[in-house]
Length: 81
Image (cartoon, rainbow, N blue to C red):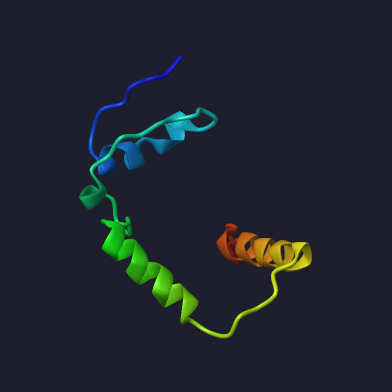
């Protein structure tokens, strides 16, 4: 059963812990969400920027695992000193 949640993007972000473990479908105004693709032209600009961002690399299961580990390390909470 779907749950309808109304509010702004900020409202939803403020209460995101309440939704942990639940599957949500959000209908939002893309202009309200930071870093959102605004339209097809914007998408094409982002894709072109990505394609021109550096030399091509071969992507393998091992390279994905290494990237995943780096991202987990980067975004994991750091112990307090």
